[in-house]
Length: 214
Image (cartoon, rainbow, N blue to C red):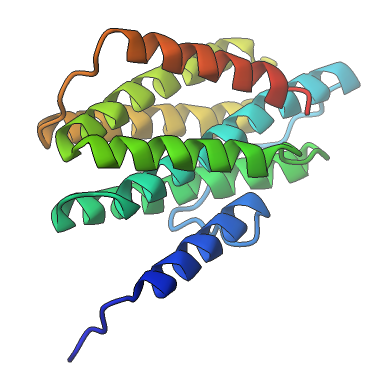
């Protein structure tokens, strides 16, 4: 069986298709059932529902950014194995995207209106990381996943106590992110220069503050 190599135009069209599917919530189909599938949906008052929706919208944006980062890194990877590694990671993050999207609908809410902006920014960062080199690109994955793991831990504390469905989703996401970071570290990730993690944390805090509301 002959595998046709993609032309530059083909690659651009593939990236556009991926972006549109992620941004407009048309593509995410989870390979695994949602952790909340069999969890009873307890009634929440208006304030608790709004707060839970805000936190799950932040988590949804985080998964939009994760898709964009991995696709950007795959597009500029120097090594084919690295490219496949990034595409595999993006595929695994699709579960999270689908779960968060479903939970937002259950909470009568919506994804962030700024998803096109979040995606574009994260894709550019991922592509730049890939251009710098595969080991630093893996280091970027490690730092990203560690920060995401930390903010998911915060969300487990901040979600309404009665919202067991959202908690079940966030708990599994947190475990998955830790595993992704460990995998990138084992693949030879290099440590990022000192200012980079702090800049990433600052950008993440801005995103979370905005996405909670918009």
